[in-house]
Length: 285
Image 1 (tube, helix red, strand yellow):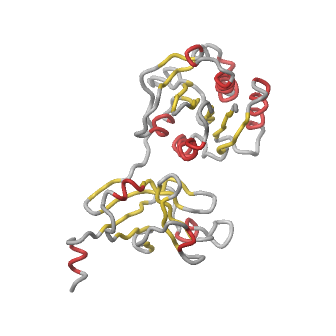
Image 2 (tube, one colour):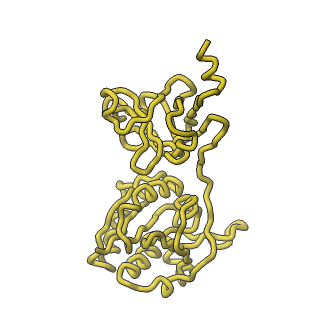
Image 3 (cartoon, one colour):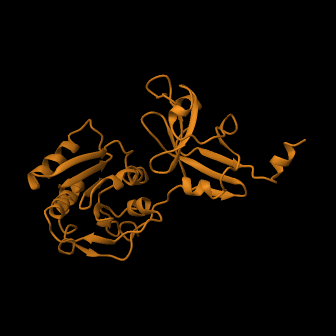
């Protein structure tokens, strides 16, 4: 099966996404086109990386992922070393994006197979008016149709790394932050299960958000472990901490974002009170 996915900041109001899909079908009529998201905030490569990293494990080898966010190449502009259309090979799949920091934000600490700069496209300025369609789509279709990557690009030793928010560990404390808010208003936090478990099993903890106004002291296995309308914390399918309201949604009776007044980038504190800690001793008196 020939799969191309699209992740862009183009929205659905204009004709841009239709133009992308029409061009793909002209060049590769048997392609299956899957939309990851077209609602990425304009030029927000970290958000695009989050969307793709959250679902790429569900695609088969040979899939090609086009990232249409901040796609115009930069060639020695303002002292920069440039950003060039490139291909990352990852778990047998191909990700085509501008080397603007996306690849570093996507990978973080993950291993990859190889990284390539696409050849012979910077010489044609006419392609720059719609790079996702004019540069990325033709390369994606050639990969789908069996062209070898070395006939399309040259291997390159490094890629740019964008700033991404990471959790901070202190004594008996994790300081995370909200990196995504989904359609339900659920808060996705940059604290994964592995990091959380470093503090040990069965260690009491409290998750604070909006300073100490709201808190949760239990990780549930599913939303329905708490009554309807109650706050809940789980580790989602991607292993990230998620704070939600069971059966709550921003468009209905209110999700976590709306009810708690939490926004992207807000700090989430997880305080642990292991045996022998000051907090535990004080609770004895």
